[in-house]
Length: 138
Image 1 (cartoon, rainbow, N blue to C red):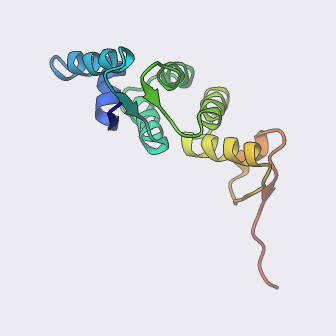
Image 2: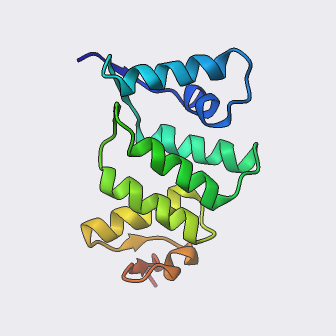
């Protein structure tokens, strides 16, 4: 089955429906993927950029963004890598005030059972995540 890499602008137009020509064409693309004509490949970066655009430009609520992106990630015709981590990142994003990239890093750290080297105390709010703050060498 053919695969197409999904760019952020198509995903945003699909989710917002705010463009008179691009939005209907984006909906058609997703419908064709759901019908099995091809697979849309959604990268972690496109998902992160979409979350940022929806939050900063469209001023959507974090829970709304997370729910919409979760629906996309779980849709027929969509291929993602690390689906479980992405879904966890979307939950983290919806339930905290951290940006999507930090929510994603927390999901990776949890899934991989590894700490995070960071000065950012935002990671301290995630249960089970150990933040290691780099120290000076004396």
